Amino acid sequence: MIPGEVRVVAPIIERWRYRWFGRLAVSDGTHELVLPMTGSVAQWFQPDERVLLALASDASDPPDFQDFQLWRPVEHGLLPVWPLWQEEARYERRSPLTGAPLATYRLLFREAARETDFLAIVELEQSHYASEHEKVARWTCPEDGTILDANTRPLCPACHRPMRFSEILGSTRASRFLVAELLDRQSYEPAIVGYVRIDPPLPIMHRRLPDGTLVRHIRRLVFPADWLELTYWPERHNRLLREREPY
Image 1 (tube, rainbow, N blue to C red):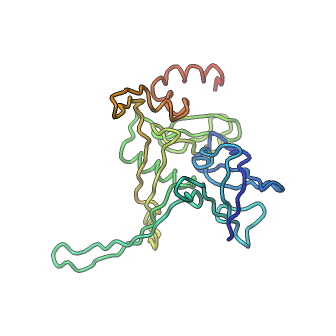
Image 2 (cartoon, rainbow, N blue to C red):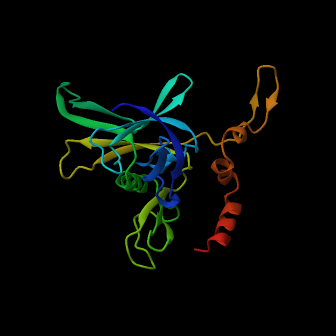
Image 3 (cartoon, rainbow, N blue to C red):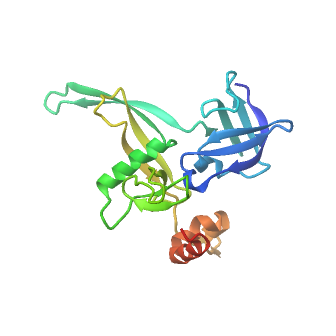
């Protein structure tokens, strides 16, 4: 792969499945290419932004998820954007009496990027935190746009097809998820054995500078309003959304 500079045309994101699917349209000035990735990554790019792209020699047309690498130029070098971070590790379980190894586990730690990753996260959340009064996930029917909150994957009340994962309730648009995948597992062992949810700091907070000056609502100056305001006034946004989209 030889990296070359390309220009971002636009991120292409469907809100209902941005957690596990999105696209980024880029151009080298002559040809336009649509790169598949998660919407969680694509949402950070702005039109006309310059990035470095490297395509595999055997890349399909259009490229698949594993056919390219992408970097964003930053002040001190290049920031890897795609593929997502992952790292393998081995853990031994030892006898508390003799210290002899009893079992060895091979784990792959990586950022959640597939719908199946989030289905596993829903199962883990449901096992630990869910109740009849608190729902874990939001589901969407891609056929008719029906939206439901539920702890397990429901059937669409309109078309009676299984709904698709959309969102972990309580997370924000900027939240990211890391999963621990068990490699070399037995058929009865789950693929995803743990996860970590990374949320951005939500307080809008003030910042006091060294000279004593107080900068109020510092996060409003850094992040777009739709990343913060939902956290502070959900009732108003929910009412406006229902007026605009009655379903």
